[in-house]
Length: 520
Image (tube, rainbow, N blue to C red):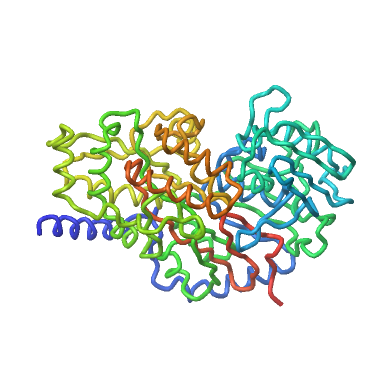
């Protein structure tokens, strides 16, 4: 009963604080919908005449170079500037892009791509096989430099056998390589991608003002003539504050708001259209195994038992999320191991017993580093603080900007625990490789030779069913070892001003702006 009362009072406190804060997506006006209807309609009429749309982004661009960017939001924006040999459709299937066809040898080692002819980069130069060789050589470090992507470091040789044919031979069979071919193709020997990016996508880079706006313009010469954008110009506006974004939507100053929350939708009422669905994303509380006492599996299990994921989903995601038990979303149904979501049912007494067994009967202090740019993660952290206090774990939240998080947490692993989301991928290997012992970005520092072996066997498998079983076993190991607290795959909702249509959902975060258009 005491636990219930504390959680109830905490919920009331959250609501009270939200009502007093301008940082959350709350309704601070009583007539927002009616007062701004005319302004919104006027903005759409203006947008139809000048062909410009403005999209709110909660995070800053980390790097315009597609090979150096690590932030999902940046990659989603710049995906409109670059195309790869392949792309993905809404079902997560690989479809032709720059490549019109490909063949894979019987042993799975040789990939032959035939390129479409007549494709132009944004500087007017022809895209040929030499550009593919340059791009993949750079990604894989095949010229002696450090690889920029482990996905391409497995390439043994790559050769342009003609102007429009590329033959790639891998060092070993790797089932994940095919999906890697959605990575951008860039012009050979062009070294200014971080300041003036050039690709072959449906939009061209126009300008970038740090902390303010990234502007793209329509590529009239886009090779896929059926996908030439109808929108003339796109402005991605950096707006980390949710409430300010809602007000901008109400005023007609923002046309599209990806990742809008439920409270924001209530404020906008019926003045917007929405597109909603699962993200193939994993929100987790990552635990650093190199830090005491998180190196003790019983401590990690206790933390899992103390956290009520259903409550987090209800309080933070307004019930719009899928509970997870491992680092995998059911959005990738074929590879998903069912039944892990309730492996650690909330149990305060059992959690306390495990802590006592580990020598922490009185609990311990824990620093929880959270990127301040993501209010969703901040809100999740606040709920976790209260839940862990029930078992004597005193959590202090440390807020840092996402750019600092990338360096301090993701690259240098200088943290104890963190709340973050892992973006979904099209290949299960790319989702689960994050926990391989020697993987460069294994920032939770998990080491398990059995897990490593399962991942290696999955990568070498040629039978898809056998491959799926390996990935499912790997997911179960992550759960049994309480590697982290895997919370949910939150639904993603995108709000659009009335008069816009065509925004679609994908199993990866992708802005298909070539399909967005003004209604008649």
